[in-house]
Image 1 (tube, rainbow, N blue to C red):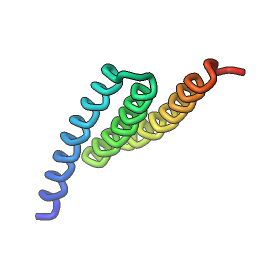
Image 2 (tube, rainbow, N blue to C red):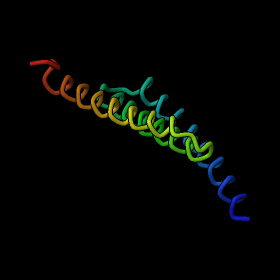
Image 3 (cartoon, helix red, strand yellow):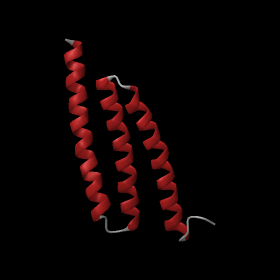
Length: 93
């Protein structure tokens, strides 16, 4: 019984994250300002990371956990670079 509930919860969470990823993509493409686009990108990488973690939990494959770690690191660096570019107009000093 608990395995069935866990499986249902994983599938429901995956669908919710896919919907959230689509809405963040819409915000990134449609955002009226550059700050909204950066926020949409930041939300997209967090949702993608969580989606990879959920797929890894469902499959039991270590590859998805390592991929989530790479997405988290690259997403953080991307957000910092984009914020620095918006603040100063340049990324590298």
